[in-house]
Length: 296
Image (cartoon, rainbow, N blue to C red; front, side, top):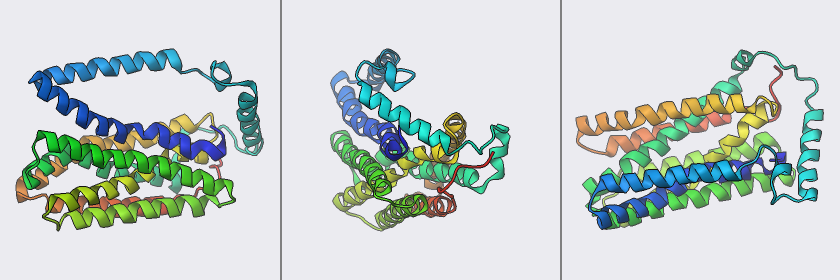
């Protein structure tokens, strides 16, 4: 992607997570009901995933110019944007990959993505159980509510990417744009989840969780940060480091929430845990310098 399109590209890619959760809620619930077995439903979902992998292998190319749906002006536009970007970075040496960890922005990027995923994976894994145990949703209403909540996240992610790119294209400074976007994401997410902990009625709970996911998924713009901090030939390394930390949250948070719920017999402290992660996400996002590439 060109620099002024990367937020939209990042959120389109990252938006697959909430979109998959939204569609999965409907599809899996329907398959379990229709087939009478969660095992058969998982087999069908697994075959579908393998089919998507084959589709990606057939469709994706190494560069835009190689793709039959990209015309000459579009390919030239992308290549010229990349050349202009590379020309600005001739002063940056191709140093050791390890040298990136000298910079606060890299650590804050990795930790920020970890705290983002603390909230997302926590809701992804425990939200159905919470709605079932606390608010009495059955499998049909559970699938519908989960679809609404996570589809709101998908829409919010695309909106966040569009706002970021438009703001940048209109002259917004990188630190101003990204710090503001992530601040709104963290504050609205934290406030919504905090309020959920005190609500008893299911409809306001679903509405507030939808608001939380809508703004939380603005954090998908994080996938543009590796290309902001590093040259294009190093962005994959930083993206891998960031995602590694995000998946630490994916491994540990479901266990932590399970322990909290088991010990307390309530989801209240689990919601407060998510709210705390939202504040940590805000702190990390604010500490990143988005204005320059790292001199390594």
